[in-house]
Length: 226
Image (cartoon, rainbow, N blue to C red; front, side, top):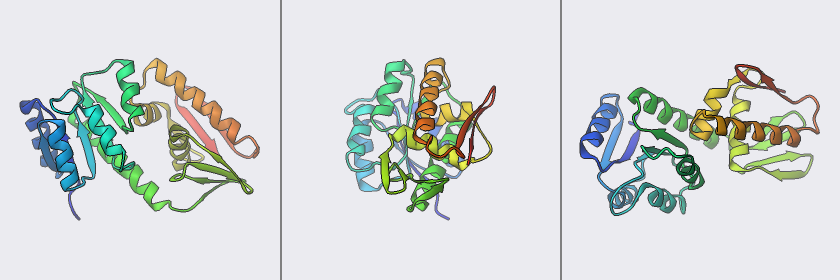
């Protein structure tokens, strides 16, 4: 089995080398780039499985690099690894198509768990090229569409991510903190309020099948009953 390949863009050489060596010791293949332009060239030379990008870098910052990659590649997981942790920075990062936002300082184990989680979700999406039955509905994760009879309703990217995550744990509890971490990037108060809004939106979109419920399991998370 081939190693998971990562492009790591980090302009602080000492930190970049530590992260690279730590990932390599866990059997990842890592290309370390000192700036955004070098990382873009590496990406264009050989597309990796995952991109881990610092935000503040010379020549091309991480946000600009992500935006450039997302013009042609909507799927390769992009994880920002940065000390820029203001809410507006996080919102901007996700708006540019990032899959995750890890704040410095961080633990290597946390970073590795997030890398593997995003790769697992990508593989699941790629395997789910057809419609998934959900009561009276059908759900297409890749197209981000919910269908009832012959009527299709588009979902936003975040609605689709949330519904897919609930479906992966259908009839079981999906941990609230896990949802916030993997989809919103952190489990702070504002993200939690946003998640509750999206849960309400999904309930409304699924209301034509009374057998489907998204239950709030207080103190734990949500359960999709179907």
